[in-house]
Image 1: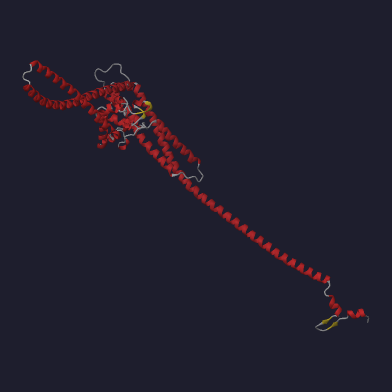
Image 2 (image 1 turned 60 degrees about the vertical axis):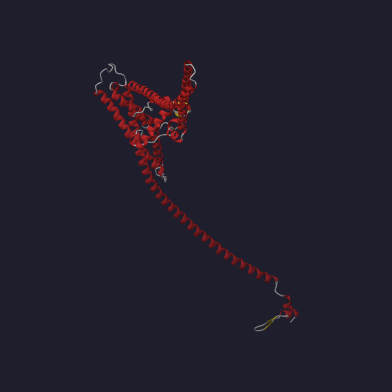
Length: 450
């Protein structure tokens, strides 16, 4: 056995393997170590791959479950939104139907009012110039009734332009609500309130229009029935001309009444002042007479002519003093009236006439804001101390077309409402008396036009 063979010999033990010393010194071969490391690496990579596959699979499963949950949630939200939208649409439809019903009622009421208003305008204008109106013009009491109708009642009816504006407004609302059918649009309470208010307003105005149409028809019928008084012209004039002449006659009568009342008041005032002045002069005269008597006794030697001249001089001085006293009394009266016109109570009561504005009497308008004219008030009959004069003054102070000045408001917002209230009658009467008393002073102070 050679030495190489000896080196390869291994001494084996059932439990312990004994290698030769040389072999132990050489260690594990590189290829074996590399193989072991390779196996370990492959095993580790396999384990990592398995873990990674499990992780990726779990993530995919979670993503699928999350996606399913999101889809189910979206479907649920869509269903709830659809249900909620349907509920809103049902509620909106109910509100739309309610609003549309109220709007249609308002449209119908305004349309009926407009038709009746146009018929009233046409029939009333025809009566002014027609043959039926000429028959009315023959009867004085019918002319007076027609004057009240045309000058007082007809101007207080809602103008056609206002009716058209309200009708067009309701039609716009009707188009708006109709166009929103099938949507979730809900008309607000303002639309319902506006429609109801327009309906109520149209009903009230319609009753006025119908009453006035009945008056027009009644006037025409009475004109055919009544016999004209003796002396009536054979060629009857139109009702329009008859009303104008009646208004002119009333204005002329009122001017005469005012002038007479003014003259009487001035005479009364002058008499009062003169009486007081006379009493003062009598007292002074008695004192002067006593003094003259004493002087006469002391100057008994003076000739009679000198005494007469002295008396004449005294009489002249007394007359001059009386004139000056009258002037002073008149000026004092003016001062008193000016002070009265400046009082807050009088200014407040006469504000509907003294406040500057564009609208003037007889439906005219001024270039700039100015108070009403005193002469126009007199000519209109508003300062006549009669029931008719009070009514005319109330109409001027109540006129709703005057947007610049404070307006009077009577019961039921009716131009004749003051006649049914003691306090309002007292207010109108007091205002007329103040205008009569303070008219010239108000013109002087610029609170009324000439």
